[in-house]
Image (cartoon, rainbow, N blue to C red; front, side):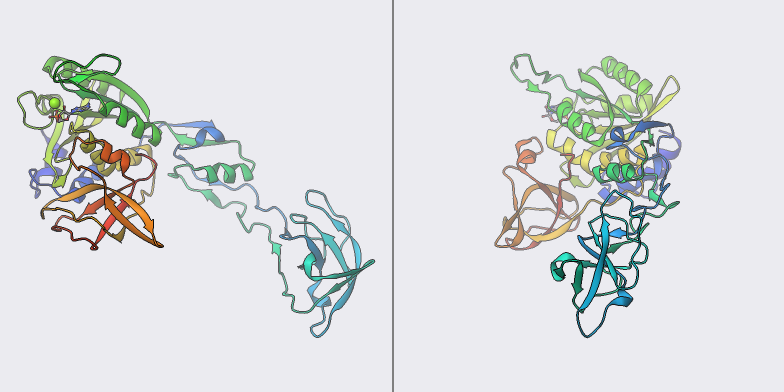
Length: 423
Ligand code: AMP
Ligand code: MG
């Protein structure tokens, strides 16, 4: 390992016990967003990252208009001590122009969304007036300007409606459409290659032999990467053979921005990943002070002029998901061009299960956040083994037990991090 990775990861840090926050910080300091962009019709922008601000070409709404069904009046006409009779001078409908205006002593029947007639400044809702032929009686206690939506109140012409770096959501599609814009410029999709390693892994569709397990990591990774909107390059299962792993790394590095592997990063006899990673690229091996997910490799590999960032995730299925959520997710978002990257929501709630915890590492226990008697509480899901994937499926949040924390008694408050859509 040379240059930047060594400088950043080994200077003052203990690679055998790197705090979670520090590992995150090191990675964030190294990666940068993809540069290439493309123009897509707005529907296809859902889940993509805006590469340029979307500037409003118009005021939204375009005109002052009524927020209610009622009567458009001139506030100055209204008496303060008694009802005011006004003469009905016409009707204004939404979506239609209205020629006339409101002169002194007049009012206009108006529908929600209709443009404010000339001269009117206030809307009186229909429920409070009294109608006698064409005389509308307006009670006291009206407020000037009430129930009027003003031009540009939502968006002003020339102002940014959405900023570059925005991960586009459904509301944004509507917002862009409300401006009459049909296409937006987005970052190109991030290309992520991944493969599983292990002689014991069997692909679904074949019968398990003695000692084999089905490869599940490629499926959880597929799910999380798809939800993040990445372009996926699935390189399958690779055996614990140096030549096979090297070939997979070369194939991956040629085409991908990021490579994820699972398994083979610990210190077992067949754990070749570490060795090969450092032969092929610049890699830092860390034992992160966390559980699950202690061994993890991070670095970069070059092949035929393309450089890919690399995460060597642990093999245990829960550890894969936890390390993805805590490290990979944010890295991919950064590379996708998302800015700012907001911290995942976390908050304190009482825990109804006692928890075993050793100080000196951050633990991410799988748990269920639930509402009981109007109070949010959290309970642990079944077995917390790093291989017990059902604990993830049952859970809807992590309990994050901080580095220094020890055992937790029933009723103590703990920090929870609800899963967002990825898991
Ligand atoms: P390793 O990190 O290679 O030592 O693997 C740790 C544990 O995770 C072992 O029990 C492996 O069998 C299991 N494991 C590794 N990769 C996978 C995978 N792709 N799917 C399911 N289990 C796996
Ligand atoms: Mg293995």
